[in-house]
Length: 311
Image 1 (cartoon, rainbow, N blue to C red):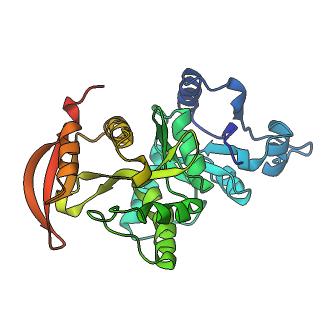
Image 2 (cartoon, rainbow, N blue to C red):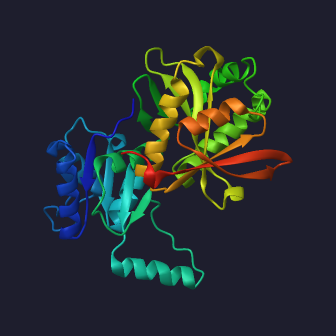
Image 3 (cartoon, one colour):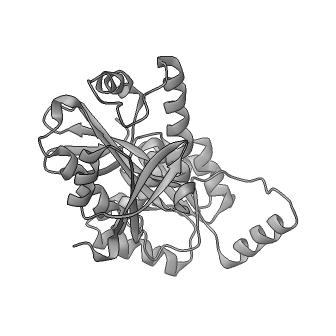
């Protein structure tokens, strides 16, 4: 299984390198996981090939797909790209100015395709780097855990379990049903490749820790009807209802939205007549705000001010 083992630091300003070392050390990351990649010279004075540097600097058992390179050197970043290594490109103030000038002039610069472009590393920690690495290799993000559940991004291995959950009695009374199997498969593949990377959030799946089975869906999405604010959505499979799973999972997501996404308000849209969901929203601390008509349905909008929630 793919796993991030090493942070390879390439050409960076001394201060930016210090930020990384300080943050990763404070984060409890083993110092052996931080490896410095330096330019060297061959015996005849020529520059060493980066593949050679990689083999010389890193332990022999460390492979490119276990590493993430952070560098401001285009050649190093291009080298990482050829090895399919995850990478973050540092944009110095000068290079940032060049990029902005190119965009203003309508030019599309070539060069390496890093997973992320950063202007500084003052707040970068191991979790952030791990997520960049996971996105590069198509590994679903683990969003958070509760006492009984794991909340994570959807992956196609759960498609059949998703259909089984939606087939439960009453599951689609107040939520949209899935598409036909092939159409839903295409939809979920597009969602994984486009929505998760673009927003960093979306509808996730809920799996029971004890069994690993999919027991529900929950997450947040942006809604135009809510002036771009996020909406909380959730659904728990019939066999797991009335056991406190929904409250456990939604409380964790509310905390995640506040702390990790930096939102100060969250919404619930509940179709008129769905009194069970209304009572549940109130239990979570949501308050009724207004009625809306969305796609010809009358919806009640409930809001939760996250700045007033407990830490």
